[in-house]
Picture 1 (cartoon, rainbow, N blue to C red):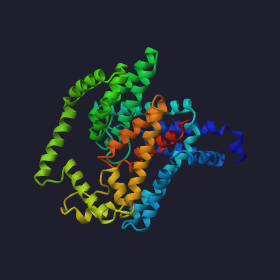
Picture 2: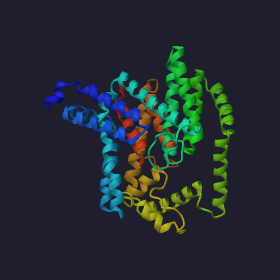
Picture 3: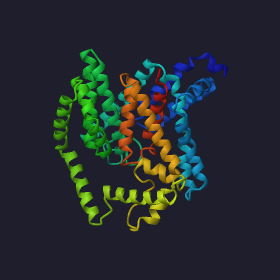
Picture 4: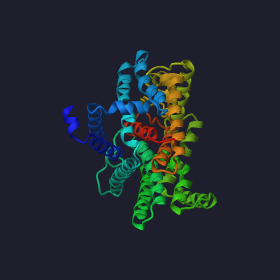
Length: 393
């Protein structure tokens, strides 16, 4: 305790959060190291008492508390306790949504950590581009830079789409031509990376928000002109070979599914969602328990040749399958609260970034379980912290 008093604890906590945002799109090990430093200093200094009181009055306490406790409660009745424990063990991530209040209330600090996120995203995007060009070795056969996890291109595309929108906001607010050029470069870099890594969740999120990106770049307040250019540019982008191939593959997957062929990217998702809905009808109030979907999939998938799958590739179905109505309500409550608080401060970097992330996360959650991968789950916790620090007066 005496040691903590002798150092500038707040400055070190701020530096730790800056590191977390920087490494969020790069790798889990440095992310965990920065997070461990933050939590140690936050607790040892006693700062957690002040931030906890602010969190209680922030409007985020109930959904965050539910998201923290439900995975532990779900261990009581899950058929797969070992799998459930690995998921429940990550619940401590939500503590960062409280700890980040120590920096989220300061506009300059929030602005800096958001720019650190853009810097880390640009660094990993550069590595991914070098991999795509054959100048850097691939990680697990995919040009996703150093991004961690299974199916990393999906979560990476979510963070890239978020970064694209935030960078376009900074472009619209900067006055100097040098800084505007930097943010325009980031917009182009992120969009290019989304185009070749193959994450259709990122495609959809970026497409839906493309008019906003174009309006920022053109610095137009009217809707018609940005919308026209957005449609024109999207038409050109869809014609690119990589994206055209992914769109064609999706159409082919749907055709095969109608013919009874399930083992395709979209076919598997449709089959997963059907099984998930059956599980929800079976136990709508409390769900089947933490990590239980894998057993439901194995029992109901019918075709033994289909792969092992442990989540339904949809965050909302996953919460409902695992924890019933309380789980689904908690996630929707939190996302709606992010929208509400972000909208009130939409003219600030903090407010706009919260809205951007909430939209992209929601869209990405329709086709994959974004509440499970470390990068997107941690991002949800950190952006919830930023939302909690927004002054609503």
